[in-house]
Structures are given as structure tokens and as C-alpha cells.
Image (cartoon, rainbow, N blue to C red; front, side):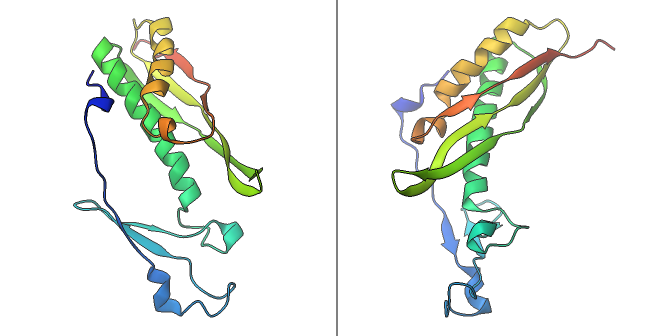
Length: 162
């Protein structure tokens, strides 16, 4: 596996407050929180603030996207390790949850719990596949970048034979 600390990676995005089209920030209650994020060569993401901060409940917010980043980073790390070890994963889902609370006088993420449900091909080594989660956690760039615990409680099963 390529060690990530041997290279440098750079990422770019352009964030545009699209809510400006609905009017200026004349008052806290009245302005639109909608935005669009553009990344070179990729589809844009439309987002907003959390509902608590008067955002649109139908759009993702930064808190959602942080949890998405943690969940998908773990998944992609896990799948890559399994592929290299010859462990055949046939299904993967994660019902992740993140918690924000006031800590040190600021609202912040204080915990994230990933709950991957992994299904392996018949004949797979269950114990070996379960052990991969710890390595995936250590390799996840996003989990390594946050200042709160990112825990995982995985459930791993073997698919029924046809």
C-alpha cells in the first residue's frame, strides 16, 4: 500500500453564496444560507446551513458533509485494504452518527460513530475482515485530521451461498 505521508496532495474548491440572489443579509432571520461548491472537473454540490441556523432541511449542510467525509473515507480505506488482502466484500453500508455539543465554550463535533455493516463473499475469513477496520481507521486521512474521536462499531457477516 502506498504510504500517504510520502507525498503531498492539494485540493481546491470554489464556494459561492447563491443565496445572495434572494437578497442581502439585511437581518439574521431573513437571508438565504444556500451555497454552491464547485470542484474542478466534478459536479457541484448545493448546500445550506443546518436547520438550527435557519438552513433548508432538504439540502446538505457542512455538518452532514463532515460526517459523510468520515464515513466514506473509512469505507474507501477498508475496501482498498480488503482488495489488497484478497478479502471479497460484496456489500457495505454505514449508518454513521456525529455529535455536536458545547465544549470549551464553543459548539463543536465531540464524537463520531461509524457503524459499518459489511457482507463478505462465502468462504471469506471473518476474523481477518473484522481486523481490517482498525487498520482502515488508522489510514483514514479525514479521521486523522479531526480533533475528536472517530469510533467504529462494525458488523461483519458472510453472504449466504446461492
